[in-house]
Length: 483
Image: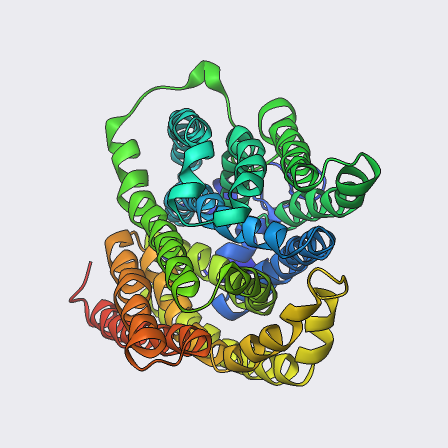
């Protein structure tokens, strides 16, 4: 088995793990799950095996985003702009979920590396309790302010539609948080296949419900929001059954044996809060950039950015999937003090990621006109096509820099250095991105294209800093100078 191949002298055997198989719910020969075997094995193999299911599930999720925008485009450019104004706040809720998921998942991976199953389950339970508190605060604060919020943000004629869409999304925050944290817990234990099934199922349901709710039921933009919330609720119910009722995952949840531990909560938050703020910083960047877009163009520019970034997010899917694998692999290696595996995981992911990014750049450039046509099929949105093409052509230069930064952050999150990962993200988004977008769009008078080029340049600088930072850190780990 893969797990036996990485046994370290003086440590308990991985065979001591008494957990169920991910595939069947029964014990395998060594008494450990297939996911744990993968996680503790060869880093290159682990990244590929953990990434593949995540690529499939995230592609389905990205496909839902494209289909969602396709149906909303039929409602006109104001509807597309409305989603663009809501997205930063939706992204904040995803950020909270992702942050807690990364904090909990990396702590779970480190305990798996140290052969501590009980500790891993305690981390999962604490993560869910923190999530419940965050859901209550986020839901009520934003739901009650929706009607005024988008007027203040300059949404103009799109403000009523944005509020209508946002209220449903904000009301479903509990499902968004639970689902994304459960995904992270499953990935943290090496069970990427189950995360794929849950995410893929939610995406397919969303794709089916979108046209029914938007047009058949004539709910308009509110229908798109309901499709999103109900599909995520379905995914949450499936994972709740696996982790709470059946308990056939490596990490199960049991409220009856929960015992509050301040040290565990602090460990989760030490990585989780900075990881959440990474998403918050990206969301704040989105809000500021929307302001700049409206200043140099109009709300149509927000619609173009909203549509274009959905396409870019599809392109980023393989890289994001690999980064989640790098978090788990780095965490397990750090817990086992196998620092050489962190080195292998990082360099392998960067090399593979650069190849993927270059292929994505070429595909995006050549197929930009066809992609733009998908979102400009109606009379109300036809005028957006030329600018969408321009956006996609500029974003071809965005992809190659991503592997430098995303895998640096993944390594730091995996080893528990969430603040460092946050610093990289803040430099890329809040500092470099906003600074260069403002310089190019307003200072140099480039207008809307200046916004796109500023985003590319800002990410390139931030990602380069992240790469240099992680190489220094990993080098220190191997020399015994960093802990």
